[in-house]
Image (cartoon, rainbow, N blue to C red):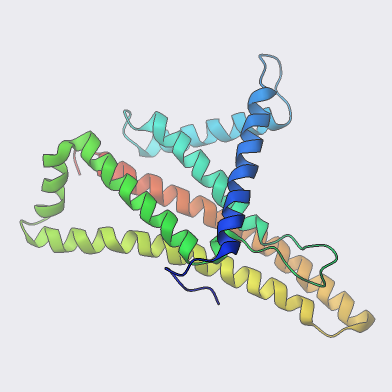
Length: 230
């Protein structure tokens, strides 16, 4: 069980570095292959992803915030997808040992959610000004009482983001590893393969969904904070 928020652990740190390296390599590969001709490979995937997130963020965020926020959302999504999927990869020749996703450790989703919380507050200060940000915290929807309501709402946000991501990834990988301890023999192998394959596909879908949910909620919260009318 990996519920600690403070104890340092090498596996999530190392796998976090691997995640960032893989995303960076993919981005550099797409940039190197960029051309005005018909795109292919990594360039095609990156252009599709950029256009998708530009459209998504453009529908949610204020116009002044949308360009930078779409790049942040794309980067965040790619990082989470890679991080979540890493735990679904077996290590060949190690008797059922699996690579661990960095998001399987609570400290990683919690740290990421805390960073997003700070960015969300920064967007409110940048686009509404310090006075407008403080006014939104203290006076809406009711004077003074609004501070309690908004504080609870804002503090629950990173907690829900962190535990939703951690819980889904941890549970998915735990069940996936449990399939390697089913009975042996021909029947056991077939059952293990069947259940393991189905759960692997299910976990892959869940990983993509959780990465998208984390990203969309971050965009939504940041857009609300940056909205002058909020």
